[in-house]
Length: 70
Image (cartoon, rainbow, N blue to C red):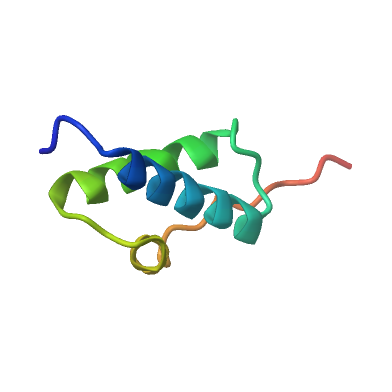
């Protein structure tokens, strides 16, 4: 696992997280965003990805459905 990320890597990861959050209508401070961020870090720890590649890797990860309180 990589121990350090370049500024460019951080920009790519942040961009992927921002896009993922926007696509799934979740806030960056939420539980779902934290899980997505962990997955992004795990992926980038294995090899270098572009933002689009990270988003493709996250395609199967969706936030849990929200239940409305009546």
